[in-house]
Image (cartoon, rainbow, N blue to C red; front, top):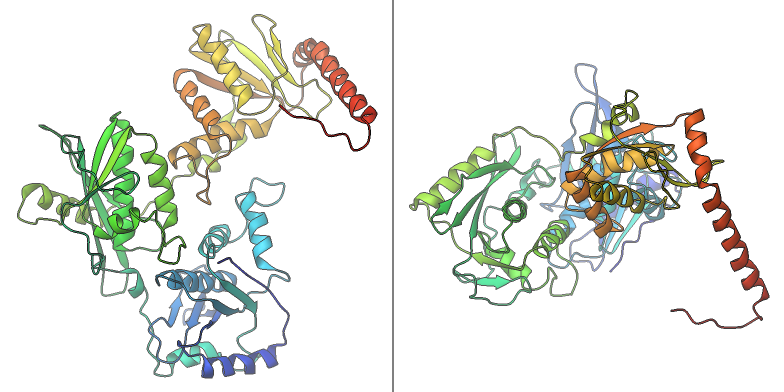
Length: 528
């Protein structure tokens, strides 16, 4: 299966009639599931602009939905929300059906290559430190369609002056979901056939080796109020023989909100706490038998496709790899036992915690907040000159005059910090002409570390081991950054020390080029 997303031009009037025919003939029994979406803005009774989206799966289909977004949302946001809704709903099936989705969204070109291009720069604007409009929704849509057999076509849902056929079909006595009905699954244990006390190791095999290991118990709860608002909370509890820690309550933030995702978040946080306690072996006890069922299958469905919530699985797998041994065990909650009772109470307490999203606050810092103009002259200084400028690239130490041709990150940072550590330094100043290097260390690195060394697409960070080494060194040595907005006389003087290295590098490059040019045509060289 793969994501197939296309945009094609169409006329509004003809498209409207095509939509109506689709609404009339779209049956859930067809091999390819056709879904029609709409997104638009309107003014409410107070004159404020609002946005709404609709998703029509078919006549009488419980998956139909019609939702008004929070104030401030735009029609484009509504169109994106509709597509995300379709993708998440499709993933609820063990084997998602092939989909053809009609949308009001018109990007004037193919969507999937564009999304992929934007994803490679984490949905920042080109050559800018600012996020794109609707960046979070674009990112979520990009993630949601991965692994689905889906085709998305631009087809306006209505002609000017005509009623919207999508909302009309949904509202004409049709059955459709409430605001968040599909995200509450109060019984994720149904049909899992996992016996009480089953325990499996990191490879999904039955294990009995964890009897005397430290344990983290986890529990989760998910509720929906009368207004249709869904919340989920979870809690973790550590036990090691007679040692016990306080129960920690949390609130599930990432959309969509489900009981199973709350259980996954509890397992992830329990593993993080175990790492903080520097445990080599641990048993994570979960009240979700469904987790054990899909963990043993490597998070794959019967068809061999990844099941939903793969991002949690990848993060949990990364955490497991940092232990000597990890076992997962299923135990049904026992409300009469004090420990389980306290877990349930704390999980419920998590429902009322503040709604705080994933912490990426470092991305909001300005370069002036990351650097200093008032340096402490007593702290050792090293210059880091980037490549691609009129200055010679490399490192120059103020105290010794030592030079190095290393400029790439994080290698240059590691070299600086390791030399500082060998010299028993506790602080270091780095003066650089590379704003990107400052942002990478002071913003990106901290967010990557907090999020399990994965980027916003849940993919592993490139050169992860090197960045981990740099992060560990930064725990020992404090770095203050100075930015050369315009090189001063002292900067230029220090840069001249790199001239011999620069000449040597150019000479080596010239020799390599001559060697390549003189090589007989068709000659195959062996690489070590």
